[in-house]
Image: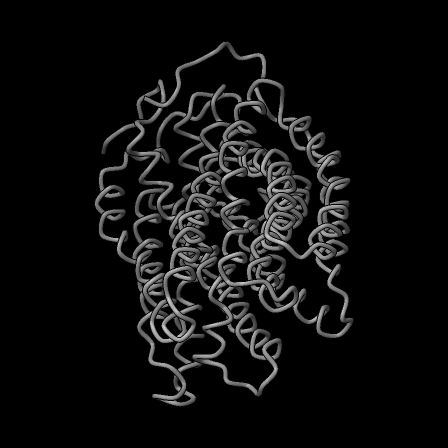
Length: 436
C-alpha cells in the first residue's frame, strides 16, 4: 500500500481528492442555475413560474435527503476499508447521477416517468455526495503537516467554488450565445454533461492515491478510537459537544452558501433581470470566494480557527441587509454583482475553518463516518431546503428581502456556535512545507 509522505501530499493527490467536491458542487449549482429551464422540462405544474420552481427545488431536496444515508454507508466504509476505496465508490455513483439527469427525456416525451427518473438520479447523486465529504476531509487533514491542516482542508471549499465558478461561466456563456428556446431544448443538458465528462479522469487520479487510514496519527489530532467504533456508539459520547456545534456551524454556513447560489433563479424570477445578468452573479460570487477561502485556511493555521471564523462572520452579518437592500432597490447588474461579491468574500473567510475544526477534534477510526454524517445532515436538511424555503417564503409574503432575513438569522446562530467551540489549531507549530 502506498503511504503518505510525512512532509505533505503531492498536488496531484490534492487534485484527485478535490475533484469530487468540484463535480458535486458543479452539478448541484448547474441544477440551481438552470432550474427555470429544468422546471419547464420536467415539472409543467401550471402557468406560475414560482410554482414550477417549487416543484424543481422539491425534487432536488429529495435528493438531499439521501445524503445522510450515503454518509452513514460510505463514510464509515472510509473508516473500515480505507479513505481511497470510499472516495472511488462515491465518485462513480456521482457520475451516474449527474449524467442521468442530463440524459432523461422531458415530460412532453415520456410523461410522468420524466420527473420520477430525475428524482431517482438526484437520490443517487445525493447518496454519493453524502459519502464524499467524510473520506476526503479525513484524507486531507491526515495527510497534511499539522501546521498546514487549515490550508489543505480549505481546498474542500476552494474546489467546491471552483466547480461553482465553472458552472457560472458555462451558464453565462450559454445564456449569452443561445436563444431562450435553445437553452430550454438542450443548453442546460450540455452544461450538466460537461461535468460528467471529468469522471473518468477523476477516477484515474484517485486510483493512485496513498492511504492515510493506517498511517501514524498526529499527536495534535484527537486520540484514536477503538477499531469498529461508530458515530452512534458510546465511544463518541465525549465528542458530542463538537459534533453538535459542528452541525450548527455547518448548517449556518451552508444556508449562507446556498442563499448566494439561489440568487441566480432569484434574479430571474423575482427581480426579472436577464439570464446573462443572473448567471453573472455566481461568477462574482465565486471569483471572490475562492482566493479568500485559501487565505482563510492559511490564516486559521497562523492565528487559530476561532478568530478567523468570528471576525469576518460578524462583518458579514452587518453586510447582509445593506447588500440585499441594494440588490432589490436598484435591480441592476452592478448592484447584484458587487453586493454578492462583498458578502461572499466575508462568507469565505468565516466558514472555511469550520470543517477542519470539526475534523481535528474527532478520533481517527470514526473520523470519516462522523464528519460525513454531520456534514450530510447539515447540507441535506438546511442547505437542500434553502431554495425551496426561500421560494415559498417569497411566494407567500411577496417580500423580496426574505433572503436577507433568513440568512441573517441563521448566521447569528452559527456565530454563537463558533464562539462556544474549542480552539483546535496547533498555532505554535513551526512553519512547514507547502503542497509540493
